[in-house]
Image 1 (cartoon, rainbow, N blue to C red):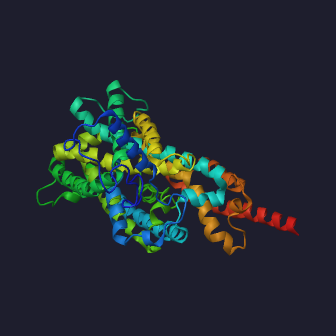
Image 2: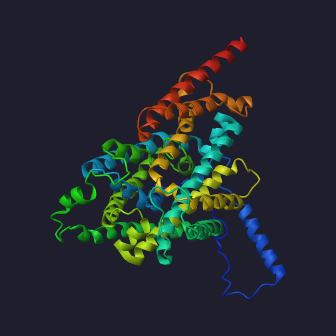
Image 3: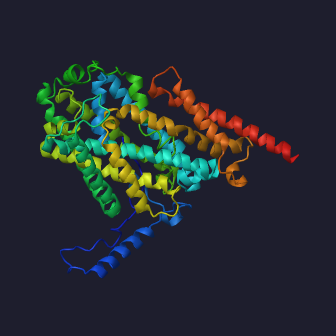
Length: 494
């Protein structure tokens, strides 16, 4: 699962920009006035950064499909993959159910980007955050964006925690147990703060260069996933000629036996999880921020470059590694036993290369409620929140449930925007009433958002399945409320 998708080439040059930062080893020491002048210049450059946050992307700024393929391929081999694939093993998934569920679920995710998210993005060329203002009003949009930003910060915090499991090996800092909620030691807190501070600083000081570095690191991280899984196969009893690979996979890895305290998962759990792992991005439309740069909506198909290498093969490799580690949920230990120091580096970099763009996206979401703040300051605030949340291991130890809740909370807004954009004009209902009437809140949208979540909360089905009926509830209820509102205004005009 990736944290976010944004256009790397156009996203946030930050300090480094096109000219880079002067190398202190090549320049003479600066006196106080010169240091102040240099700092002021850096701040001024950061304050001028702008990426069509509040207007349509121009035609000359659109990107080719190859860049979208690279974005998805790079961002979906993330630190969270070490946890998600491992949890499938701990939840007693059978191999056949895993393979079928991942194949179909990831296909549905690709189609959701292609048929739902990308078509809206390429028509309006706006981020969801700004387009939503026209539909829901600035007040409700602010509430949504704050909720969105907090959830991004939690996700980035989970990535920092996962990286901490790798770094902690060298300092003897234990990974909290599966049922942990609070940090188990002072060492874990210190480690989370140090890694979080580092990630935040790097996100502020060099996003463009770091994003390029991430595009180089991501293929290597993917190789570590595959190489690590292959390396531990002999410890699981697989012969050199792989003749008994299927037997070992079905009896020692995905054997249908959940670990103590873990719920058993089947085909439908895997299929729906693969589909909604990025629910907020495709069905929830957050990836309008990415696809507003696409030349055509068919570019949504490039998401397959992330879904199948990252959300299928990487999850499978992670499952192999956790089985070899005696089902211990410790990403750092899993990677170290499989690939040595290269595995440790892979976990650390996987957290780094995905936490940074997640902080960027949180900054985008917060910018609408802090319109006079430059993005670097917002990123600093988001990083501080993320670092505090990273201290709580519950966010990565309960990652599967968090991903489900995260997508569920944001899903109704995606349904509202989809309905407003495509369905209302076909029914003859006036669009963008909040914008035209100057409403701070579209109360119909607020009622649908809250009402859908309440309905989903009381559904007597598994958490993973609730978003789909919830989506239809949101669409139908919003149409009804908007029809009533539109009819009343028509009667008043008469």
